[in-house]
Amino acid sequence: MAFLELDQLSAFYGKAQALHNVSLSVASGEIIAIVGANGAGKSTLLDSIMGLTRVTGQIRLEEKSLIGLSAAGIVRSGVGYAPERFNLFPYMTVRDNLLVGAYTARNNVSDNIAVVHKLFPRLQERANQETSTQSGGERQMVSLGRALMTSPRLLLVDEPTIGLAPKVCNEIAVALKRMRDELGATIVITEQNANFAMTLAERLYVLESGVVKAEGTVDELRNDERLTAAYFGH
Ligand SMILES: Nc1ncnc2c1ncn2[C@@H]1O[C@H](COP(=O)(O)OP(=O)(O)O)[C@@H](O)[C@H]1O
Ligand SMILES: [Mg+2]
Image (cartoon, rainbow, N blue to C red; front, top):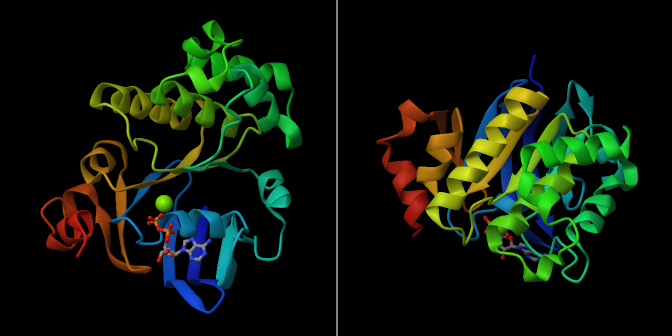
């Protein structure tokens, strides 16, 4: 049984269609990556799972349809989202940004904060720092930490490495693997950085102009020209 299933999903902004009949299936405990160039539809795909776009088709989490639920309802169903842009409150502290993420938390807030601090000790050291004064890597940690505040079973992460140095990308990869291994989360990331996606994910979907062009394991796609084409764009 698929944990997350998208069936013939199309997404629209007004009359413009950004996703075309996207079907994908994620097993419980998998880490998968949606890889594609700028404008391919990666953010739209994650926004659509969160109920933030107008869609046709089907989205199911453990066989239950998410279509028609509010974003808050989707969070309550067990989905956490670390979006790419404009996601932190810059003049609030690390701690307050984490607390904002807890607004629909099902579990104890202090337990969740402890989980986040265990994954990212630096956020505990910097709890009182405004996020506007943090590095890009630290802000990404706050963003991931905030998504964890609702104890998600499915974690969606939009371009976790954008603008980050290779060493920091490694730290993010280690943290995401721990979220799967220690917290049991199933993880969907998007990436323009195909190399990073291949070091982290077990399977890839290649998205181009809102269409899935290829899918397979990292080994199956490593030398696939469709991956290279999506990576460099057209
Ligand atoms: N809010 C929006 N309104 C209209 N068009 C949008 C909006 N957001 C994205 N798009 C369009 O949808 C397509 C996919 O964008 P996006 O999902 O942001 O791609 P990616 O995240 O892969 O860079 C692009 O053509 C983009 O211009
Ligand atoms: Mg995007």
